[in-house]
Length: 235
Image (cartoon, rainbow, N blue to C red; front, side):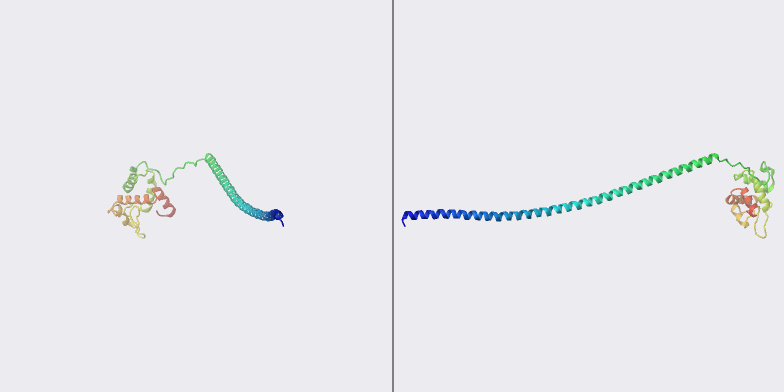
């Protein structure tokens, strides 16, 4: 082979090799692109699946939060309704009570306006009212004077006179042998009258003072003591 022909063949194979190499690279690139495209599709599907899962989680969390908020809002609304009902009921009860009290007050006022006062009664004394203690004498005069000095009016002596006339006849030495009562007021026992004075056995004034103290403390007035004696037989 001539050198010229050898050079030509060598160049021809070089061009063929370059072209073959280029074709091979192109095929590899195409195949790589195919695989790369498939890998990208798989990655994209993975990303889409991940995004969908994340969106579902977000949606589920948002739904739960919304449901919880609804529960809270419903509970608050019901509480507010119950409180409003309670206040309305309390207000209605208070209004009814005010109306009832107003009606009672009006009825009471009407009743009081139409009610007639009871007729005045004149006390009934068991005897004539003396003009003064000077109409009496002895132990009665002393008793009347002591009674007046203790703040009672003269008409009370009509009762006191009747009471002690029944008990002792105004005798300062009167003694009840069955009970042991002694003196004008018939103190039982007699020594009680020591509180009014050591001479209680012989001094009618001492006995009368003790007797008036007993009547005031137990009955208030001689006429009430006389009324009790009239009802039960003793005072």
